[in-house]
Length: 166
Image (cartoon, rainbow, N blue to C red; front, side, top):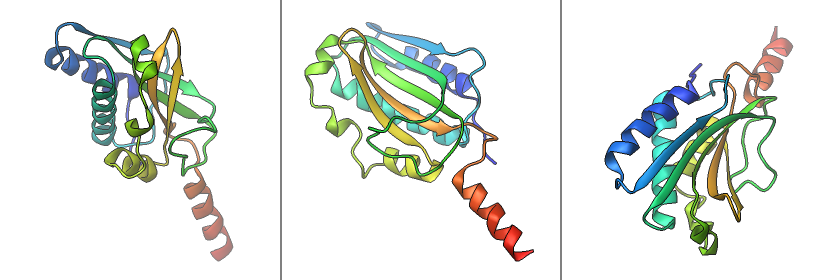
């Protein structure tokens, strides 16, 4: 089973972004202590996060602060743009956001359209994708992935099918 160490993947991405983004753009990283790994291939997660960064930067003013974060989560929000295809007891919420107050005036629907590589990634790994915004906190595109080692619907159905056939 694939497992991605979320804080490590975010730290590598933050280092890359600090070298490639305009020097007037700050990159801040905040990963919860003990943030669990997620059920996903590390390279696939890095590609999805890079796409999230591109979408957030394209939709916000050219400078400011890019925020990368990760924390444990009980479940994805009900208002997710892309609903999860997995059922899990534990999730990791990984966010990419901008602190720009101007971003709240933009139309954010194109940030996470349903027929993109990001949407395909979410469906493949059972993830959810949501938008969260607040007046003082800017906007965040949040990817919710099942924690590594947690049972998901697919595994539970597989175990049930084998129990009946044995």
